[in-house]
Length: 271
Image (cartoon, rainbow, N blue to C red):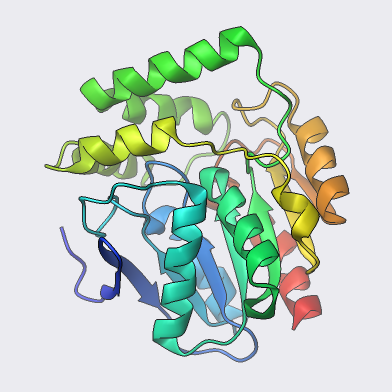
């Protein structure tokens, strides 16, 4: 279902849906959801950031949410081009970019390629600088991805694992919405594209020169050792690290206040 406030920007191959608070002083903040998610993944965090006086923009990814289907490239680098197109569309010269999970690579890529457009980046449970996966983990990801393409309900079931402790009040409704989205015509090709994409490319962090923040849930099931991964990211980006005790893969929804408490001082420093 399309939100009445949804806006769109045309990009090569389709159009990208976004929301823009359009108010707030200082540098705008662009929030990018993770793989197979929607921009409303930040629904608990956005009010906390806007209440603090920040202009906040949330964006759906290619083929997901309210963005169009039919894209042939769903890589983190392609999404970076969409972010740049959105900034141009809104007349924004520089912004702080926040990426969760899959799009951590996106904000790192754009910060390295176009440093004049990126004032700072924040990673939330991202895959950049991850520990190298073993053969079992690679096989598991491939098998799970193929299963989700055929049975979208599996993605809804997986959400229970990604919120090991605190869950938002609308958790069941939200995950049902994710399953419904993945069942829409044209979404299956997008799922295949994201599952096949490289969410943890090597070497991109070395080009980043802007301020960076690493936020990681202490109980993220995607990482056997979340704090070790966070340390690797912080070292590679010369970033500050904040661990959210009890947080899973989406602390902005499970622990929105703790996520805001980590993010707001960073935004003030960058500004």
